[in-house]
Image 1: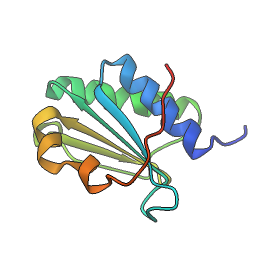
Image 2 (image 1 turned 90 degrees about the vertical axis):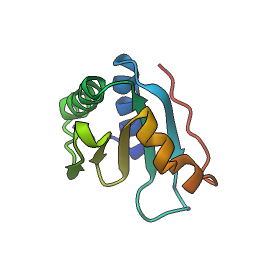
Image 3 (image 1 turned 60 degrees about the vertical axis):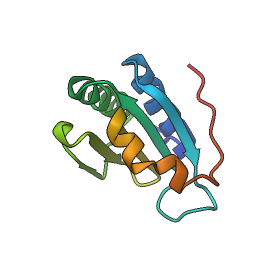
Image 4 (image 1 turned 180 degrees about the vertical axis):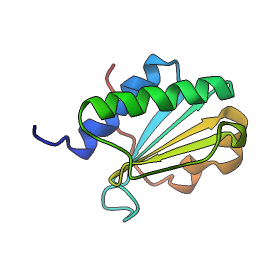
Length: 117
């Protein structure tokens, strides 16, 4: 089975998150800007239950394609869950936690990648 590109993986994860009604989803294209990852997916949920649903949907969608996270961290209660797939890092926040950390401002020079549904 051919492996998915970073762009394919982040789009697959984004569609899975949107299927669980993720709010204000953005994909930052960090290629050539950062050595951390090629893409950051950032989205919000309105409750800890929704955060967990988004994370599980993303994990499942990528697992079906043979892709597993290298690392995950955070708890629902912290308001920030992170899935690290190496070339893509997904940040799933409660809305108020996302506003506090403001990753979009920190990476403001990164172009946005469009995600088709």
